[in-house]
Length: 86
Image (cartoon, rainbow, N blue to C red):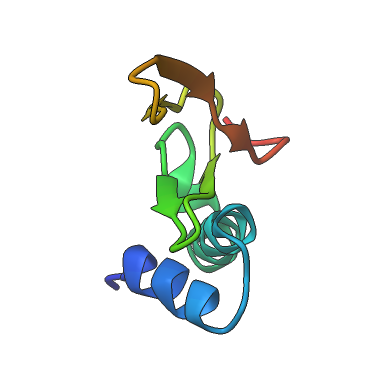
């Protein structure tokens, strides 16, 4: 079974979800569908809204992403992750 998570993230954002909520929803959806098959496998999404807001969410800890601000400063952030996985 293939899951097109990015299409789900984009569709959720088109329906009004924030980038963060859309990423979380996609990871939760995949976790529900695949269950134990994902043990030890990282799944993560990063999304950028039209307004510049960034969202990220992962199945496991350790998913990081970088954001470069208008000033040119780049910051690295850890993504929120689903508790109880691993």
